[in-house]
Image (cartoon, rainbow, N blue to C red; front, top):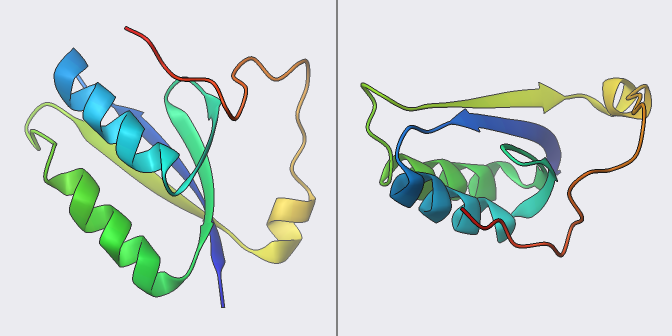
Length: 92
């Protein structure tokens, strides 16, 4: 069973932020510059967490994983246009 997770991050270093961006891009798609949505198995989610934490300074950086149940995901509302396309690469 897959879970839908919204991943938001605030990473101080450009270098660390770019590494995390590249990791997240392999698991989901970005909907904002520092927000991704992924639909993954629990096992894959643990792998994703392990990969991300390797590149964080836990005293400066923060990554949030917000889980959406199917009912909640279906109620998601987006206002306006999508600013970041799924195939776009972040450049800093």
